[in-house]
Amino acid sequence: MGPNIITIERQIMDAQRRYPEARGAFSGLLSDVAFAAKVIAAHVNRAGLVDILGEAGGENVQGERVQKLDVYAHETLARIAGRSGHVCVMASEEWEQPVAIEPGYPCGRYVLVFDPLDGSSNIDVNISIGTIFSIFRRVTREGPGTLQDLLQGGYRQVAAGYVVYGSSTMFVYTAGTGVHGFTLDPSVGEFLLSHEDIRIPRQGRIYSVNDANLPLADPRVGAIVDQLRRGWEGHPPLTARYAGSLVADFHRNLLRGGVFLYPAVARHPGESPKPKLRLLYEAAPLAYIVDQAGGYASDGEGPILRREPRSLHERVPLFIGSVEDVQLIEGVLRGARALPGT
Image (cartoon, rainbow, N blue to C red):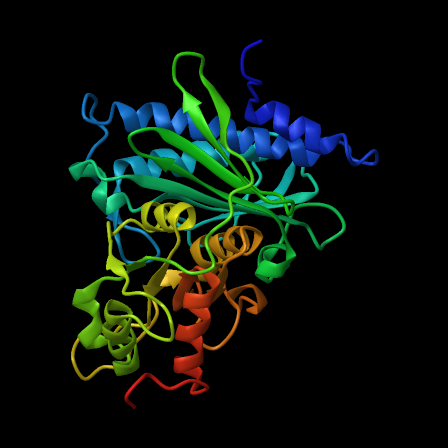
């Protein structure tokens, strides 16, 4: 007998059978996102062979230069999920306003929020990039979805996940019953279960931060990073690993244990620090995933999952990873802990 090969579609359907009242819409939506990931992966993997690399021209709502693959990934997810009948409204990191369902297509019971291509500035240099997504139940009763459906706290997510487009393509997601990873087998075109019930170590060995930003951040963050390098309170010294792609850095730390730090940063010396990462599209989905894997995500004051978004593109500081490391950082930033020697 050979190994028990489990595709993502089979795992999703097996999970659905545990809920006799399920109508299949949620499972269908997850399958749609997985299919969109395959389509995007196919273009990412041949990005150097077709006219798809580089900038598309203009800036997105975040003020960032739009890459051609950004546009393609956004349109692919919006088209596949938006025409399925499973969602009532969507939101994209690339789009200023809610993404409405196209006329002629039915509205469903769920809401999809996504960052179509995180880390896209790394496309041209062949560093791993990714897609991040989040699913909520709608709060309005019927008809087209509204901003109210989109602006929900992370604790109300029913699923979240990400896709890493790297040396292999990997789809990692949680629906509230653990975190599972599936690796795309290009020979059969299927995501196969490769990492079942992922658990992040309680204490990490890696820290990930853009050191160039530290002089422009809260001085306490720089002091924390110095202490992480030396080790503290029984924690061994941590090693720096930073790819500059949130999905890639988070994925490595999720599997091996570690902490990712992205504090509020000033644009220029003397200005007030401002956060960069988006709550809905980046911080909240990854916070739900790490929580399900036994880790923790904080904005420096408390859990990311408890934050209620006030706008589609609200930004937050993010400290995420192994629970003991993040709690130590949060304690210092809240004033509840002191760094050794202070």
